[in-house]
Image 1 (cartoon, rainbow, N blue to C red):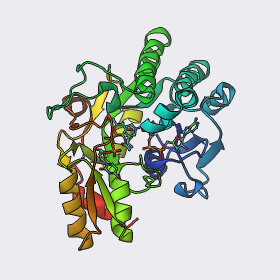
Image 2 (image 1 turned 90 degrees about the vertical axis):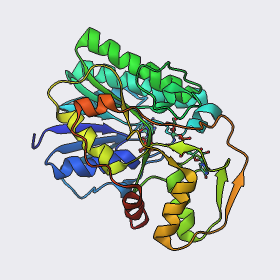
Image 3 (image 1 turned 30 degrees about the horizontal axis):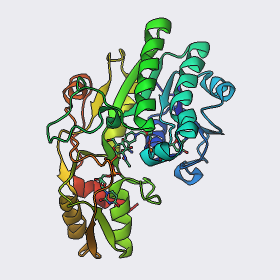
Length: 309
Ligand code: NAD
Ligand code: UD2
Protein backbone atom coordinates (compact mmCIF):
# COMPACT_ATOMS: atom_id res chain seq x y z
CA UNK A 1 0.00 0.00 0.00
CA UNK A 2 3.06 2.23 0.16
CA UNK A 3 2.55 5.64 -1.48
CA UNK A 4 -1.24 5.21 -1.70
CA UNK A 5 -2.91 8.46 -0.68
CA UNK A 6 -5.43 8.57 2.17
CA UNK A 7 -7.57 11.66 2.77
CA UNK A 8 -8.31 12.25 6.46
CA UNK A 9 -10.91 14.90 7.20
CA UNK A 10 -10.43 16.21 10.72
CA UNK A 11 -6.87 14.87 10.58
CA UNK A 12 -5.45 17.66 12.74
CA UNK A 13 -7.63 16.64 15.69
CA UNK A 14 -7.17 14.14 18.50
CA UNK A 15 -8.06 10.88 16.76
CA UNK A 16 -7.14 12.11 13.29
CA UNK A 17 -3.59 13.13 14.12
CA UNK A 18 -2.91 9.81 15.84
CA UNK A 19 -4.12 8.08 12.65
CA UNK A 20 -1.96 10.37 10.50
CA UNK A 21 1.14 9.20 12.41
CA UNK A 22 0.20 5.53 11.97
CA UNK A 23 -0.49 5.82 8.23
CA UNK A 24 2.69 7.80 7.55
CA UNK A 25 4.65 5.16 9.48
CA UNK A 26 3.14 2.51 7.19
CA UNK A 27 4.34 4.36 4.09
CA UNK A 28 1.11 6.04 3.02
CA UNK A 29 0.84 9.56 1.72
CA UNK A 30 -1.73 11.49 3.75
CA UNK A 31 -3.81 14.52 2.91
CA UNK A 32 -5.53 16.23 5.83
CA UNK A 33 -8.57 18.45 5.32
CA UNK A 34 -9.21 20.37 8.51
CA UNK A 35 -10.53 23.81 9.43
CA UNK A 36 -8.39 23.83 12.59
CA UNK A 37 -11.42 24.69 14.74
CA UNK A 38 -10.31 22.24 17.43
CA UNK A 39 -7.47 20.58 15.52
CA UNK A 40 -3.96 22.00 15.67
CA UNK A 41 -1.07 22.30 13.24
CA UNK A 42 1.18 21.24 16.10
CA UNK A 43 -0.55 17.83 16.13
CA UNK A 44 0.85 17.16 12.65
CA UNK A 45 4.39 16.33 11.44
CA UNK A 46 4.23 19.02 8.76
CA UNK A 47 7.89 18.55 7.84
CA UNK A 48 7.04 15.09 6.43
CA UNK A 49 6.90 15.45 2.63
CA UNK A 50 4.24 12.71 2.42
CA UNK A 51 1.82 14.83 4.47
CA UNK A 52 -0.28 17.62 2.97
CA UNK A 53 -2.57 19.90 5.00
CA UNK A 54 -5.53 21.53 3.26
CA UNK A 55 -6.92 24.13 5.62
CA UNK A 56 -10.65 24.44 5.00
CA UNK A 57 -14.17 23.34 5.76
CA UNK A 58 -15.90 20.06 4.93
CA UNK A 59 -19.04 22.15 4.38
CA UNK A 60 -17.30 23.59 1.28
CA UNK A 61 -18.37 21.08 -1.40
CA UNK A 62 -15.91 22.27 -4.05
CA UNK A 63 -12.99 22.02 -1.63
CA UNK A 64 -13.95 18.50 -0.52
CA UNK A 65 -14.27 17.50 -4.19
CA UNK A 66 -10.71 18.70 -4.84
CA UNK A 67 -9.43 17.03 -1.70
CA UNK A 68 -10.77 13.62 -2.77
CA UNK A 69 -9.01 13.58 -6.14
CA UNK A 70 -6.29 10.94 -6.23
CA UNK A 71 -7.17 9.37 -2.87
CA UNK A 72 -7.50 5.59 -2.51
CA UNK A 73 -9.56 5.95 0.67
CA UNK A 74 -11.12 8.60 2.88
CA UNK A 75 -11.35 8.59 6.68
CA UNK A 76 -14.08 11.06 7.59
CA UNK A 77 -13.48 12.30 11.12
CA UNK A 78 -14.17 16.03 10.73
CA UNK A 79 -17.03 17.08 12.98
CA UNK A 80 -17.82 19.38 15.85
CA UNK A 81 -17.24 16.65 18.41
CA UNK A 82 -18.88 18.47 21.30
CA UNK A 83 -22.45 17.31 21.86
CA UNK A 84 -23.16 20.47 23.84
CA UNK A 85 -22.02 22.68 20.94
CA UNK A 86 -24.65 20.97 18.76
CA UNK A 87 -27.31 21.67 21.39
CA UNK A 88 -26.27 25.33 21.59
CA UNK A 89 -25.94 25.86 17.82
CA UNK A 90 -27.69 23.15 15.78
CA UNK A 91 -27.63 25.11 12.53
CA UNK A 92 -23.92 25.74 12.38
CA UNK A 93 -22.85 22.32 13.70
CA UNK A 94 -25.16 20.68 11.13
CA UNK A 95 -22.93 22.15 8.41
CA UNK A 96 -19.92 20.29 9.77
CA UNK A 97 -21.62 17.19 11.12
CA UNK A 98 -24.08 16.41 8.36
CA UNK A 99 -23.44 18.56 5.26
CA UNK A 100 -19.74 17.70 5.58
CA UNK A 101 -20.59 13.97 5.39
CA UNK A 102 -22.82 14.46 2.36
CA UNK A 103 -20.07 16.47 0.67
CA UNK A 104 -17.65 13.61 1.33
CA UNK A 105 -20.09 11.14 -0.28
CA UNK A 106 -20.52 13.33 -3.33
CA UNK A 107 -16.80 14.12 -3.67
CA UNK A 108 -16.02 10.40 -3.56
CA UNK A 109 -18.64 9.62 -6.19
CA UNK A 110 -17.15 12.27 -8.47
CA UNK A 111 -13.55 11.18 -7.88
CA UNK A 112 -14.34 7.45 -8.07
CA UNK A 113 -13.02 6.76 -4.56
CA UNK A 114 -14.76 3.78 -2.93
CA UNK A 115 -13.54 3.19 0.62
CA UNK A 116 -14.62 5.55 3.36
CA UNK A 117 -14.27 5.07 7.10
CA UNK A 118 -16.80 7.13 9.05
CA UNK A 119 -16.68 8.16 12.72
CA UNK A 120 -20.20 7.84 14.06
CA UNK A 121 -20.91 7.70 17.76
CA UNK A 122 -22.57 5.73 20.54
CA UNK A 123 -24.68 8.88 20.89
CA UNK A 124 -27.04 7.43 18.23
CA UNK A 125 -28.38 5.02 20.90
CA UNK A 126 -29.43 7.78 23.28
CA UNK A 127 -29.76 6.90 26.94
CA UNK A 128 -30.93 3.39 27.78
CA UNK A 129 -30.02 3.76 31.46
CA UNK A 130 -28.93 0.15 31.95
CA UNK A 131 -25.50 -1.35 32.49
CA UNK A 132 -26.08 -3.88 29.69
CA UNK A 133 -23.86 -3.74 26.67
CA UNK A 134 -25.45 -2.11 23.64
CA UNK A 135 -25.38 -3.98 20.36
CA UNK A 136 -25.86 -2.45 16.94
CA UNK A 137 -29.51 -3.57 16.73
CA UNK A 138 -30.44 -1.56 19.82
CA UNK A 139 -33.12 1.01 19.02
CA UNK A 140 -31.64 4.30 17.87
CA UNK A 141 -32.72 7.26 19.96
CA UNK A 142 -30.65 10.26 18.97
CA UNK A 143 -31.32 12.92 21.61
CA UNK A 144 -29.23 15.78 20.26
CA UNK A 145 -28.44 17.44 16.93
CA UNK A 146 -24.98 15.82 17.18
CA UNK A 147 -26.49 12.34 17.40
CA UNK A 148 -29.09 13.05 14.70
CA UNK A 149 -26.40 14.29 12.32
CA UNK A 150 -24.28 11.19 12.95
CA UNK A 151 -27.23 8.84 12.36
CA UNK A 152 -28.33 10.72 9.23
CA UNK A 153 -24.74 10.61 7.92
CA UNK A 154 -24.70 6.82 8.45
CA UNK A 155 -27.85 6.55 6.31
CA UNK A 156 -26.37 8.69 3.55
CA UNK A 157 -23.19 6.62 3.44
CA UNK A 158 -25.39 3.58 3.10
CA UNK A 159 -27.41 5.22 0.32
CA UNK A 160 -24.19 6.00 -1.60
CA UNK A 161 -23.12 2.37 -1.05
CA UNK A 162 -26.31 1.04 -2.63
CA UNK A 163 -26.58 3.67 -5.35
CA UNK A 164 -22.96 4.42 -6.25
CA UNK A 165 -20.88 1.52 -4.96
CA UNK A 166 -19.17 3.38 -2.10
CA UNK A 167 -17.60 1.04 0.47
CA UNK A 168 -18.34 2.66 3.82
CA UNK A 169 -17.02 1.25 7.08
CA UNK A 170 -19.20 2.87 9.71
CA UNK A 171 -17.92 2.91 13.27
CA UNK A 172 -19.81 3.98 16.35
CA UNK A 173 -17.07 5.05 18.74
CA UNK A 174 -17.76 4.84 22.45
CA UNK A 175 -15.29 6.79 24.67
CA UNK A 176 -11.85 7.21 23.16
CA UNK A 177 -8.98 8.72 25.18
CA UNK A 178 -5.28 9.40 24.88
CA UNK A 179 -2.63 11.92 23.90
CA UNK A 180 -3.77 15.08 22.04
CA UNK A 181 -7.35 14.95 23.27
CA UNK A 182 -8.05 18.61 23.96
CA UNK A 183 -9.02 19.20 27.63
CA UNK A 184 -9.84 22.89 27.20
CA UNK A 185 -13.64 22.78 27.07
CA UNK A 186 -15.90 21.74 29.95
CA UNK A 187 -17.37 19.22 27.45
CA UNK A 188 -14.02 17.68 26.57
CA UNK A 189 -13.54 13.99 27.30
CA UNK A 190 -13.57 13.33 31.03
CA UNK A 191 -10.17 11.60 30.96
CA UNK A 192 -8.50 14.57 29.29
CA UNK A 193 -10.01 16.96 31.86
CA UNK A 194 -9.25 14.86 34.94
CA UNK A 195 -5.69 14.09 33.77
CA UNK A 196 -4.83 17.70 33.09
CA UNK A 197 -6.30 18.90 36.37
CA UNK A 198 -4.66 16.11 38.37
CA UNK A 199 -1.30 16.95 36.81
CA UNK A 200 -1.68 20.67 37.54
CA UNK A 201 -3.08 20.12 41.04
CA UNK A 202 -6.39 21.82 40.17
CA UNK A 203 -9.66 20.73 41.83
CA UNK A 204 -11.68 18.07 40.04
CA UNK A 205 -15.49 18.15 39.75
CA UNK A 206 -17.34 14.88 39.33
CA UNK A 207 -20.86 15.38 37.97
CA UNK A 208 -22.96 12.95 40.00
CA UNK A 209 -21.83 10.22 42.38
CA UNK A 210 -18.89 8.99 40.29
CA UNK A 211 -20.50 5.56 39.86
CA UNK A 212 -21.44 6.23 36.23
CA UNK A 213 -19.56 4.00 33.81
CA UNK A 214 -17.92 4.40 30.42
CA UNK A 215 -16.27 1.98 27.99
CA UNK A 216 -12.90 3.69 27.51
CA UNK A 217 -10.65 2.75 24.60
CA UNK A 218 -7.09 3.99 24.17
CA UNK A 219 -6.63 5.89 20.92
CA UNK A 220 -3.74 3.64 19.80
CA UNK A 221 -6.10 0.64 19.89
CA UNK A 222 -8.69 2.53 17.85
CA UNK A 223 -6.05 3.54 15.30
CA UNK A 224 -5.10 -0.12 14.81
CA UNK A 225 -8.72 -0.79 13.85
CA UNK A 226 -8.99 2.29 11.62
CA UNK A 227 -5.91 1.24 9.63
CA UNK A 228 -7.47 -2.18 9.02
CA UNK A 229 -10.68 -0.50 7.89
CA UNK A 230 -8.70 1.43 5.29
CA UNK A 231 -6.92 -1.70 4.08
CA UNK A 232 -9.43 -4.56 4.35
CA UNK A 233 -10.58 -6.14 1.10
CA UNK A 234 -14.29 -6.00 1.79
CA UNK A 235 -16.11 -3.43 3.89
CA UNK A 236 -18.39 -5.10 6.47
CA UNK A 237 -22.04 -4.16 6.04
CA UNK A 238 -23.75 -2.09 8.70
CA UNK A 239 -22.48 0.02 11.57
CA UNK A 240 -19.97 -1.40 14.06
CA UNK A 241 -19.59 -0.49 17.72
CA UNK A 242 -16.07 0.38 18.82
CA UNK A 243 -15.43 -0.30 22.48
CA UNK A 244 -14.13 -3.10 24.70
CA UNK A 245 -17.36 -4.22 26.38
CA UNK A 246 -15.66 -3.26 29.64
CA UNK A 247 -16.57 -0.42 31.87
CA UNK A 248 -14.84 1.82 34.37
CA UNK A 249 -16.57 4.02 36.92
CA UNK A 250 -15.33 7.59 37.30
CA UNK A 251 -14.27 6.66 40.84
CA UNK A 252 -12.08 3.87 39.43
CA UNK A 253 -10.67 6.34 36.92
CA UNK A 254 -9.73 8.73 39.74
CA UNK A 255 -8.20 5.88 41.71
CA UNK A 256 -6.03 4.92 38.72
CA UNK A 257 -4.92 8.54 38.28
CA UNK A 258 -4.04 8.87 41.94
CA UNK A 259 -1.97 5.66 41.81
CA UNK A 260 0.01 7.02 38.85
CA UNK A 261 0.48 10.58 40.08
CA UNK A 262 0.82 9.67 43.75
CA UNK A 263 -1.94 11.96 45.02
CA UNK A 264 -4.99 13.81 43.74
CA UNK A 265 -6.18 17.39 44.15
CA UNK A 266 -9.53 18.00 45.88
CA UNK A 267 -12.39 16.06 44.27
CA UNK A 268 -15.95 17.36 44.63
CA UNK A 269 -19.17 15.59 43.72
CA UNK A 270 -21.83 17.89 42.23
CA UNK A 271 -25.19 17.56 40.48
CA UNK A 272 -25.23 15.10 37.53
CA UNK A 273 -25.01 16.77 34.14
CA UNK A 274 -28.46 17.21 32.62
CA UNK A 275 -29.15 14.42 30.13
CA UNK A 276 -26.04 12.53 31.22
CA UNK A 277 -25.86 8.87 30.30
CA UNK A 278 -25.51 6.67 33.38
CA UNK A 279 -23.90 3.63 31.82
CA UNK A 280 -22.37 3.05 28.42
CA UNK A 281 -20.87 -0.24 27.30
CA UNK A 282 -20.28 -1.52 23.78
CA UNK A 283 -21.21 -4.98 22.68
CA UNK A 284 -18.25 -5.48 20.35
CA UNK A 285 -19.00 -8.84 18.76
CA UNK A 286 -19.33 -7.35 15.29
CA UNK A 287 -16.02 -5.53 15.73
CA UNK A 288 -14.27 -8.70 16.88
CA UNK A 289 -15.77 -10.68 14.00
CA UNK A 290 -14.45 -8.35 11.28
CA UNK A 291 -11.17 -7.01 12.71
CA UNK A 292 -8.05 -8.34 14.35
CA UNK A 293 -8.24 -6.55 17.66
CA UNK A 294 -5.08 -5.52 19.51
CA UNK A 295 -4.64 -6.48 23.15
CA UNK A 296 -6.61 -3.77 24.95
CA UNK A 297 -4.23 -1.15 26.31
CA UNK A 298 -4.93 -1.19 30.07
CA UNK A 299 -6.44 2.04 31.41
CA UNK A 300 -3.39 2.79 33.57
CA UNK A 301 -0.97 2.28 30.67
CA UNK A 302 -3.05 4.59 28.46
CA UNK A 303 -3.24 7.17 31.25
CA UNK A 304 0.53 7.09 31.67
CA UNK A 305 1.02 7.75 27.96
CA UNK A 306 -1.44 10.61 28.14
CA UNK A 307 0.24 12.13 31.20
CA UNK A 308 3.68 11.83 29.61
CA UNK A 309 2.72 13.30 26.22
P1 NAD B 1 -11.45 16.55 17.57
O1 NAD B 1 -12.28 17.77 17.84
O2 NAD B 1 -10.07 16.51 18.14
O3 NAD B 1 -11.36 16.29 16.00
C1 NAD B 1 -12.27 16.82 15.05
C2 NAD B 1 -11.43 17.48 13.95
O4 NAD B 1 -12.32 17.95 12.93
C3 NAD B 1 -10.67 18.71 14.46
O5 NAD B 1 -9.36 18.67 13.96
C4 NAD B 1 -11.44 19.89 13.88
O6 NAD B 1 -10.62 21.03 13.67
C5 NAD B 1 -11.98 19.29 12.60
N1 NAD B 1 -13.22 19.93 12.12
C6 NAD B 1 -14.34 20.22 12.82
N2 NAD B 1 -15.26 20.77 12.01
C7 NAD B 1 -14.71 20.82 10.77
C8 NAD B 1 -15.16 21.29 9.52
N3 NAD B 1 -16.37 21.83 9.37
N4 NAD B 1 -14.33 21.19 8.46
C9 NAD B 1 -13.09 20.67 8.59
N5 NAD B 1 -12.61 20.21 9.75
C10 NAD B 1 -13.41 20.28 10.83
O7 NAD B 1 -12.32 15.31 18.08
P2 NAD B 1 -12.02 13.74 18.04
O8 NAD B 1 -12.33 13.23 19.40
O9 NAD B 1 -10.69 13.46 17.43
O10 NAD B 1 -13.21 13.25 17.08
C11 NAD B 1 -13.00 12.74 15.78
C12 NAD B 1 -14.31 12.17 15.29
O11 NAD B 1 -14.70 11.07 16.12
C13 NAD B 1 -15.49 13.15 15.31
O12 NAD B 1 -16.28 12.92 14.16
C14 NAD B 1 -16.25 12.76 16.56
O13 NAD B 1 -17.61 13.12 16.48
C15 NAD B 1 -16.04 11.27 16.58
N6 NAD B 1 -16.21 10.66 17.91
C16 NAD B 1 -15.26 10.83 18.87
C17 NAD B 1 -15.43 10.22 20.12
C18 NAD B 1 -14.39 10.33 21.20
O14 NAD B 1 -14.52 9.63 22.21
N7 NAD B 1 -13.35 11.15 21.04
C19 NAD B 1 -16.59 9.48 20.39
C20 NAD B 1 -17.54 9.34 19.39
C21 NAD B 1 -17.33 9.91 18.14
C1 UD2 C 1 -19.27 10.84 24.90
C2 UD2 C 1 -18.71 11.70 23.78
C3 UD2 C 1 -19.82 12.33 23.01
C4 UD2 C 1 -20.83 11.32 22.55
C5 UD2 C 1 -21.31 10.48 23.74
C6 UD2 C 1 -22.16 9.33 23.26
C7 UD2 C 1 -16.58 12.63 24.41
C8 UD2 C 1 -15.85 13.82 24.88
N1 UD2 C 1 -17.91 12.76 24.34
O1 UD2 C 1 -19.93 11.64 25.89
O2 UD2 C 1 -19.25 12.96 21.86
O3 UD2 C 1 -20.26 10.52 21.54
O4 UD2 C 1 -20.19 9.89 24.42
O5 UD2 C 1 -22.77 8.72 24.31
O6 UD2 C 1 -16.01 11.62 24.07
N2 UD2 C 1 -17.70 14.27 33.73
C9 UD2 C 1 -17.40 14.70 35.01
N3 UD2 C 1 -16.58 15.78 35.15
C10 UD2 C 1 -16.04 16.45 34.09
C11 UD2 C 1 -16.36 15.99 32.78
C12 UD2 C 1 -17.19 14.89 32.64
O7 UD2 C 1 -17.87 14.11 36.00
O8 UD2 C 1 -15.29 17.42 34.30
C13 UD2 C 1 -18.58 13.08 33.59
C14 UD2 C 1 -19.77 13.30 32.69
O9 UD2 C 1 -20.84 13.90 33.38
C15 UD2 C 1 -20.06 11.87 32.25
C16 UD2 C 1 -18.68 11.22 32.18
O10 UD2 C 1 -17.81 12.06 32.95
O11 UD2 C 1 -20.83 11.22 33.22
C17 UD2 C 1 -18.14 11.10 30.77
O12 UD2 C 1 -18.25 12.36 30.13
P1 UD2 C 1 -17.61 12.68 28.69
O13 UD2 C 1 -18.03 14.07 28.36
O14 UD2 C 1 -16.18 12.34 28.69
O15 UD2 C 1 -18.28 11.61 27.71
P2 UD2 C 1 -19.78 11.20 27.39
O16 UD2 C 1 -19.82 9.72 27.53
O17 UD2 C 1 -20.77 11.98 28.19
